[in-house]
Length: 311
Image (cartoon, rainbow, N blue to C red; front, side):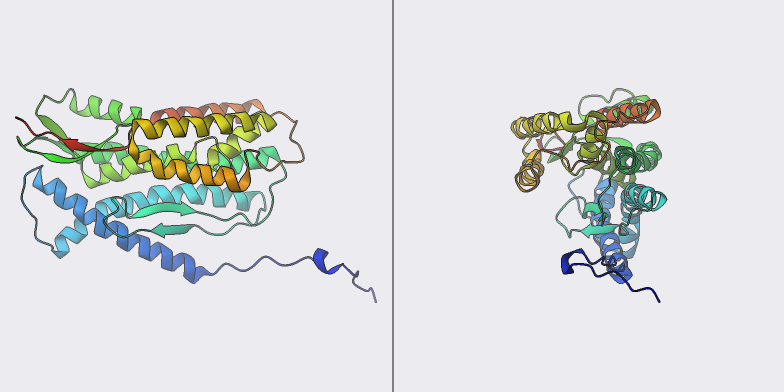
């Protein structure tokens, strides 16, 4: 009979914890609820066409909120499942997505979703594939949602006395809106359908995740491409985020989160065993596509107060 080896207590192999499916399911349902309630508010605003009137709460209004909630859940879910399925493909232990619900008055109803990778990724190629899979998958769903959402939007006249919020338009959003609606006359604005707003938020979330910093998707991609030199890119991206806070106050919270990440984890990405081995051409091409997606999805001023009081 063979005897199992005696391991020091700190080296005894430990099994990974089992997924608590009820936690994932509960967070998914809670996030579906908060995004539907928020979506009902977006649907009510869409019905009002910038007019100063109210829409009475109803089950129909709540059902209209599903235009937003189902769309954003699909985009965020596709993003995280891209990471998860890549982990499964390479035998990396990872959790199912954790959705993050946020109740009103937060305009999005969610702060996104994430998975937890439970073991180190030792290969740059595997790290790159896991990192890039999420943004690519989310973007694939965000683009048709944007097209459909813009098609259901409409141009409406702005009242003489109007105040609200202005959404910064990423290049992809701006280009698609121009193709579908042309140049909008002065005094009018595009009344965005809730599905279009979900696509807008999906693009913003994609851009945020592609920032080349630390444990973000962009940080994994940057390290896989540039190795240790990616630390300089991280510091440069942090500096850009700080500058963006002077462009738009909507960057303040995100920049503080990035600074906290830099403080706790440092500017260096955890190393892989093949740090000095360059990526193949196919992956470098995918890295270029990820950079293009970042450029198309980024906006320097995501949300700004809008005061169009005519005097």
